[in-house]
Image (cartoon, rainbow, N blue to C red; front, side, top):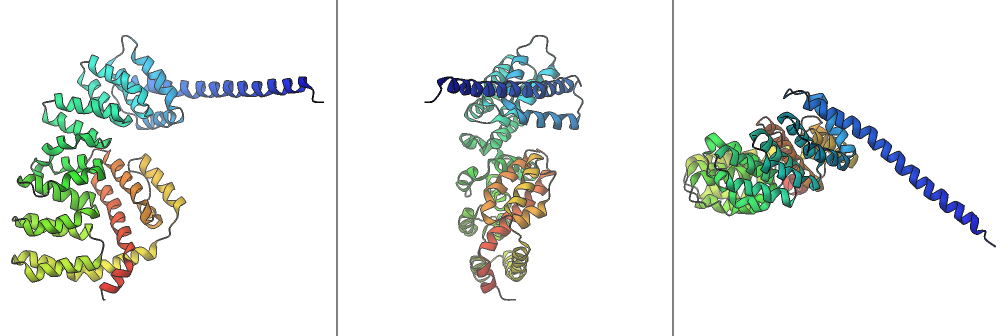
Length: 386
């Protein structure tokens, strides 16, 4: 017969072990949390001076227990006699927790505080966290803002969280002179990613030349969605502006991955086009097909598909917004199915919010384009003779 006392003792032991595990976990968080919060206070005491190493250490600490850090920081924001810089640092750290439950406190602070610096950091923290509540609040802030630069900044943040509802508001970015403000479209739509493609395609025939230039540039050079190839081909024959027509031809070299389609379309230009400059461009493209084929074949031969190697470099590049990591490993180890991750990496790179990020963005785009062409490598070998 089974002894009930033994069962009772075993149950007590299980409960004791569970309690001890919780206590150890609490102590572990207490140690880590105290350390992170101490570093946050240290940064807040710098009075606006930067310490990159300290900042990186704080972010790493937050990643280990974001919910606990968030809870502590929300309580700190309720404190009295906080300096402007303390508030800014607390809000910055809250953004890195990615804790959507903190958004209410950040929004309340934005509404109550009159400091432009604090309010700006509140918006950036909301964009770092993301989500529906953040998107709706940023959109309401855009509608209330009259300053052009601040409106762009909010659209940039809405692009970062890929808040699709904001797309109609972005038309004012497309209307800007591309010679001076081309970078505005790159940031807003580059961050919005594939969600922006249908919106942009609807404006490919827009009566405003600035809009058409920006649309063709974003689609053909930056986002390079394959679904834009046919609309761009159709628009080529409708477009009257020679400069834009040449832009379209350059875009098609990146958005069409099938050599047969490239050859057919550009041969049609040579046969039917009356603009000698565009005919020359088309002939040059046709003459370069053998070189493109060679590049695709060489790229395929260097491939050493490895999910582990890809993920290792991807994680490093993503964490540093593309500043640290080996792009060559990404190129050789990636597969066609990795395209969604590569697109996500491009968005992350643009979060550096500096034009020096464009080069790294394009490096990832180059991998995406070549990976697509590898899928058609048999067509390249058959259609393009040496």
